[in-house]
Length: 151
Length: 156
Image (cartoon, rainbow over all chains, first blue to last red; front, side, top):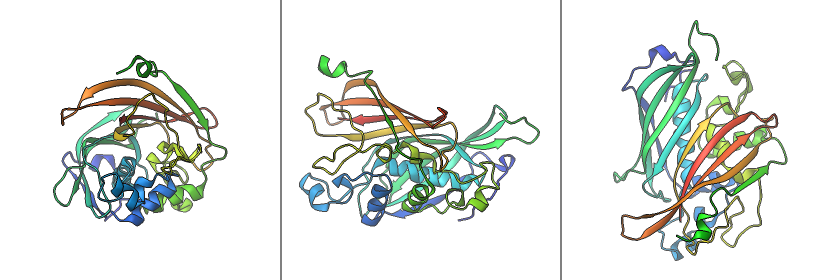
């Protein structure tokens, strides 16, 4: 994956694809995210506990998917990027053993208060084709446009 | 849906972190999400960006359990939760909407205010019904500067 250290807002084209993130969801992934966010609910690491409740395996906290989308958008946006907005609805649970792909594309661009913004539509899909999020969209702020006063 | 439940709309609670976010927590979150972006760990690189130094990954601030520790439940959970008059022990995340106003920095001490903005009942695709609880969290730093708003839908 290439990362533009400082990418220019002018070079962004509507329809441009964001580099995809492919992630094998392992128990280690879930444990690391749970620990980093102080979320020690057994849902995320206790296989017997979740099996007893009818789930096939420990499952991802939805906000981890938000973090992965943010990772993708910030990586694509380069070092001057700042995520302004991010929203998603969850449409399927993600379990240990799933493989997911986070992909996205630029839906439109605009200038707001002198800042260049790119609105990106994002999808997360499992390897069996199941869509994990719907209405997922992030807005990346590239900072003040050249010649514009900082807002 | 009961009147007792409906009357929970408007309920509000505030938690203040006992210490600043810190670089180690930021790097930990980045490692946990497989994120190698140097903005989160490399001061030399981050200082050359318009951010002027290391910042936290955007959604990190929206994980409230790092700021406040409740007594641990039998399920292992020790973060923020609403004690609502609902019999269901189901608690499914429906989605989130985040708005970020400025990056969170290592020396920021976070205060978060959670508020229940709406509760309603709706039929599900399977023909049953579910309670939707919409909460909004506002995160500010030690100077009272708004960092983020997180609007969250939980399905009970």
